[in-house]
Length: 375
Ligand code: XIL
Image 1 (cartoon, rainbow, N blue to C red):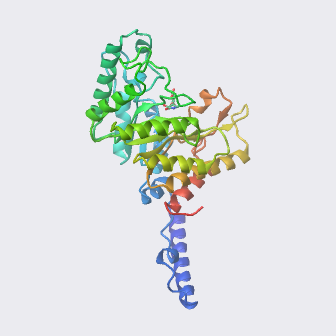
Image 2: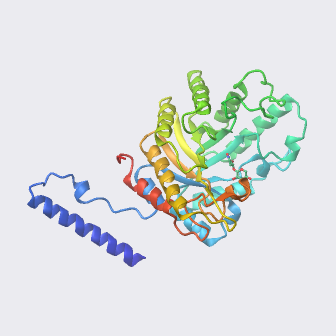
Image 3: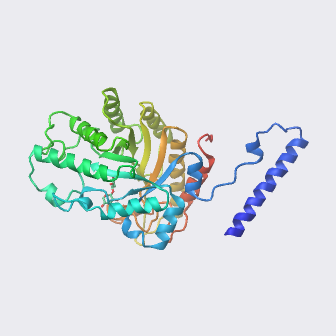
């Protein structure tokens, strides 16, 4: 490997020198140095992304850190991690009175050991609640107290270590209307008839708990231009206008189609960043139909690489899009299998044996091309 890298490095240099010589001979000596002598090509996602000042991250499961292939690829390829589940209520809160930070701490430790940033996920969501919370029949004032304490304790524990939090996850339905939820109106934290007020309260508590963390609203299926993304845009615009403390928006991007509309994605990113919000792509995966052996069609793997390429390109073209994160990185471990009852899979950048897929090559190429590449 080392030998190969040295050779390609030398070849690259040699071509650069040759081109410079040819340019001088043809009188074209004013070609920019970068074209004559392009920077050495990056060999990992992490290297390529860092050169553009971009964060490239993935969701992780701390129980897998002991698997050498998993942790090696993770540390080599990414400069950011997010706990797939370890910072959710059902992992942190086994009962109303205590917190179990063991798994979450392991994520933070891994990140620190490998100079990676940590995104926090998530403080307010209506899924994956522990039984005691879901069936506890709490009053609004008890729920308000529980949520405030939770945000405060968790964010303070990781202050200075988690740089950005998904404060609120998936609060709207496919039409962009607020979903019924324990925190909103079932029975809610006391703001049930006040629209987005319960979300705003959560953002205010979050800002108080850790004034330095970036605060995000994270959403699914509102990435392109549609009714939902427009409703989210209007809600965030209203938040900005009224000074609700929010810094960014997470576009999940669980893609289940092999054709996306990259112009619509770019336009949505553009209108969100124009509000002064950072955009993070937070949960990117592109799932494929699989047969009974879990295999995808070779053609689909190529089309999948094109979708990954288009998403990365759309983010890179907007300076306000500052992070791209995939929801896991190896097809060996992905939520897609159980989520689709086995009908879909192969959604990530590495296969089950940690081999790089065409999607990996496409992402590396786009990241290497950097922020100003033309399409
Ligand atoms: C999923 C995890 O991948 C699973 O392990 C867990 O059982 C359920 O949640 N949107 C989100 C993520 O914001 O938190 C979800 O993660 C996937 C959909």
